[in-house]
Image (cartoon, rainbow, N blue to C red; front, side):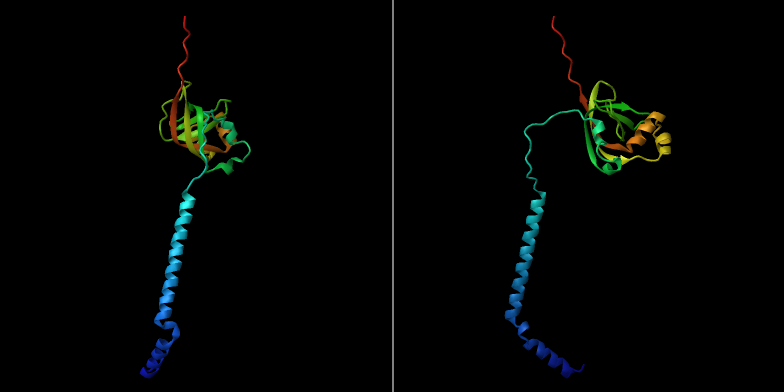
Length: 181
């Protein structure tokens, strides 16, 4: 392109009605309106998604967890990754330091792996457990690393999952009443 063609193109573009100040201002106004509405819409959607307008119940129940119900009605692998809360269960020490068994009131047992040392593992009290359902490792890991017995290994393999505990909170048993004479 030579200089004459460039001048001609410049003149054509500047004389175009779409590049006049009126159209540029209108385009800028529409763009600002669109951006403002987008920002307001984003704010409303985010605020709405963060609001939890569910009713908080006025009654709460402190009911011991029935451990066996976790595995009823679903295949164990469907539960992997779910966060679970066991309430008022007994914690029995397992064969190694971080392996325990949570026992519900009906006698159902489930393997619990925790990195922290729970304060109570006897019949003296109960614990609340918060953890994540995990798929069991290989049988050799269960036997060698976690040191499970044959019966414990059978139970864990039937269930297919275990609980990796994030927290274990000890609950103390209410003192027993002493009869007055």
